[in-house]
Length: 479
Ligand SMILES: C[S@@+](CC[C@H](N)C(=O)[O-])C[C@H]1O[C@@H](n2cnc3c(N)ncnc32)[C@H](O)[C@@H]1O
Picture (spheres, rainbow, N blue to C red):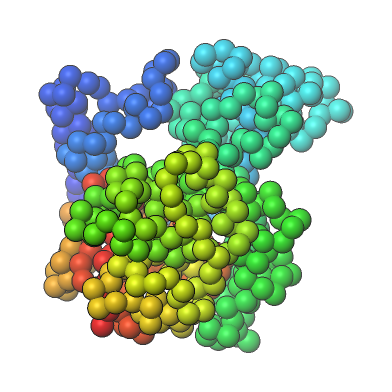
C-alpha cells in the first residue's frame, strides 16, 4: 500500500519536474494559483499549448486525486463526496452576488466582506437584518470556496480573486449587472452561465435522479423520453427544450444558450476547422449544423471557410437567439437559419457535411437513431457527419484498447493510475449522468456510439482529435 502511495507521489514529482523544465526552456513560469496582478485568465492558459505540460498536468491531477482517495479515511471521503452537492450552491451564490466582479472593481486584488455586503445593499454587522447574500457571504460561502481553492482569504474576512475565481468573472460592470441580471451571461468573459445553470434548473433536476432511475415502473425504454428526473422535478411532461421554449422561461433559454457558449470555449478557437479537411469541400457546398443552437461550430468553420453554404437548423426560439448572436459576432457572413425539427425529414438539399454537436447525447438510442435516419435519408454517398461528442473510456484496463477505427486508440494513463485518467478526465462522466437526468440521454463509449450510428444508417470512419480540444470529432459516413 505504501508502495502505491510512493508511486503516486513519484508520478506527481516527476510531472512537476517536467512542467518546470518545459517552462524554463520556454522562458516562462507556470501560472500561480493566486494569480498574478494584470495577468488575464486567458494569457495564463497559454502554457497548456505545450503538449508535454498539458500531459504532465493531467498526470498530476489524476495522481493527486487517487492519492487523496488512497490516503484519506474512507468515511471522510464518503462524507466529502456526499456534501459536495453544497459547492455548486456556494459557487452560484458568489456568482449571483457578483463577488468576482465586485472584487475586481473595488480593488485590484482584494476586498473586505463589508464592501461586498454594501454593494449588495446589506450590512454584515446587523445580524437581525441580514439578507441571504450577506449572511451567506459573511458566514462562510467564500471561506468554503477558498477551502476548495476558489478565491483567497488574504486577511480575516478579506477576500481576493485567484486564478479560478477570475474565470467566474463575467468581465462586466457591477452597475450594469444590478439592472439587468441576464447581461451577466451574454458573451461573458468568464464561465458564469454554466455555474449558474448547474445549481439552478439542472441541479434541481438531478436531485430527482435516483428515485427516477430506480423507479420499477420505469424500465428505461424510449417511451420514457419524457419521464426524466427533469420532468419529475418540474412536473413537466414534455422535453426540456419545450420547457426552455415557454414564454415565461425566456431568461432560462437565453442563459442556456450562454451555457453552450461556455462549453464551446472549453476547446481552442477554431478547433473544428482543424478537425476536418474543409479545404476539400467545394465552395458553395451545403453544410448543415443540425440542432446547431447558436451555430457556434458553424461560426468556427465559416471564419476560415466563408464560401460554404452554411445552414443552421434548430427550433424557432433557439434560432432567434442564434440570429442575434450572429448579428453581433459576424454580421457580414451570409448563413441560413432554418427552423427544423430533427425528428422530421431533413429539408436541406444535398448536404456534403453535417455538423452534429452535443445532440446524440441528449436522447435515448432509439430517438438518436431517428435523428440519424432522417439525416441519412437526406444524405449523399459522400456526405459525412462530424459528431462532436465525448467517447467514454472504461475505467478498467481492457485487452481491446487498440480499436481498428483510426484515431480511436484510447488515451490510457499509466499504472497505478486509473486508465481513464480519473479526476483528470472526470467531466465526461459527470456529463453522462447529467444527460441521463436532464434528458433521457447518455455520453457513450466507442462501442455504444458505433451501435447507435449503425441503428441510424451510419458508421464511424475515423476519429479526429485536436490538441486541447474538450471533445473529439467523430467522422461518420453512410453505411
Ligand atoms: C445541447 S444543445 C447543442 C447545440 C449546438 N449543437 C452546440 O453544440 O452548441 C442541443 C440543441 O438541440 C436543439 N434541439 C432540441 N430538440 C430539437 C429538435 N426536435 N429539433 C431541432 N433542434 C432541437 C436545442 O434547441 C439545442 O440548440
